[in-house]
Length: 40
Image (cartoon, rainbow, N blue to C red):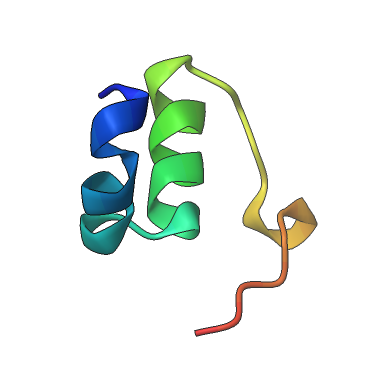
């Protein structure tokens, strides 16, 4: 992804989806109790 496609990218993936994907991609251990409160 580059800046030019950022608008299109975020229409497909929410911030929550992207954040969780990055945590998993970099093998970050996390407990969902301590993450953001997600508002849908």
